[in-house]
Each structure stands twice: as structure tokens, then as C-alpha cells.
Image (cartoon, rainbow, N blue to C red; front, side):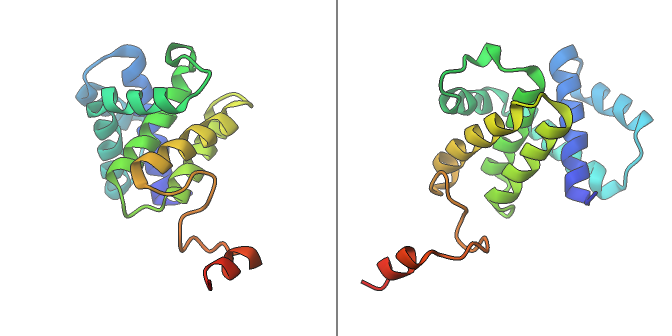
Length: 159
């Protein structure tokens, strides 16, 4: 498991614990690191993500609510909310990380920690949010993501 992947997983676990207990994040993080070992780099990245998402909770929840059509926010499972919060935070505040990576990692977290129907839900919500916060078209990978343009797409750029 890569350092960023591990950091996202640790951040999710801390954010989820905070969301359920509402203990101060300093206490949550302190207890978490007592039972979990990690490199200083991974630990710093995990705490930056968890604390960042916690601090932006209202804005993140607004974005999730806007993008989760036909789902009331209070009906979304707590683990899924926190996966989405972390990913939306990263989309908004970590522009150096490609959207496709953020979304793929969130989908993988949903596969690992949530129910079978969560990954497509997480993917759809984040795709819609990506379009708003990064200005990238929904349903398409970002420019330079390695996807080859179709003949129709190539032809339309030569007009």
C-alpha cells in the first residue's frame, strides 16, 4: 500500500471516529496513533486530511448534498459521508493530486470499508463535485490522464 493510500485510510478512520464520538480531534488522533504505526510522512498527511476535512465539514457537506441526487444527506451511511468528505476536501484543497486519483482512492475506500452499493454511489457523487470544484467535465477523465482521445474527438479538434 502506498504512502498516500495509507494516509487516506488513516485519515478516514480518524475522521469517522471523530464523527461518531465528537471527541476533540487531538484526542482522536492521539488514541489512533497509540494503536497504529506509520511513518512520520504518512502520519502528517493523514492528520492534514482528517483535520482539514473536519474544519471544512459544513462546506463539504453542502457539496455532497448538492451532488447526491435522490439521497437525503441524513440517509447516507456515516462511513460513506466520511469517505466523501475526505475526497471532496482533497479535490478542493489538494490541486496537485489528479481528480482521477482522488476518486479512485475514495472508491477503493468504499470497497474496503462500506457496503457493496457504496462504490458506484461514491464515484457518481465525486464525479459531479469534480465538475463543480475543479471545472473538469463530469463523466470524463481530466486532460492528461492517459486516456486516448477517440477518432471523433481528435477530428473535432482539427476543425
